[in-house]
Length: 142
Image (cartoon, rainbow, N blue to C red):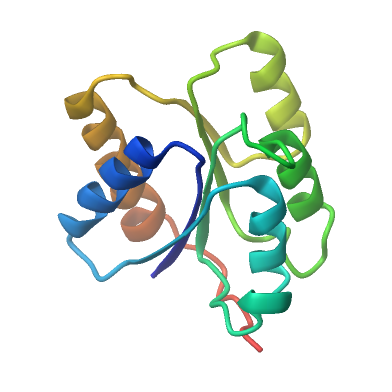
C-alpha cells in the first residue's frame, strides 16, 4: 500500500513514519512538506514524474505555499485523483474547517492528538481501517 503524507511538521512526520513501521502490512510512505509539492507529487510533475500514485492521502490543513483546503479542492475536482481517499489529519477542531473539508468531499476528518501515545494510536487506527478493512478502488497507475 502507498500512502502520501502531506505534513510540514517534522515531528509529526517522524511519528507517522514510526507508527507505520509497526504496521501489519507493507506500507510505502511518501512525504511532501507543503501543499504545492503535494500537488506536483500527485500530478507527477518535475522531480515527481516517477512518483507512485498513493492509495491514501493523509493531509494536514495548515500548510505552507498551498494550504490543505486548496490541496483537497484540487484533488477532489481532478478526475485522475478524486477517487483517492483523503484523510484530513490536523490540529484544527474548528467547525468551519470540519464543514469546509466535508463540503470539499474529504473522506474523513481526524483531530491530531498532541501527545505521542494518542498520535501513535490514531495512525494505527487509520492504517487498520483505511488500509486493511476498507475496500479501496484499484488505482490505474501509468
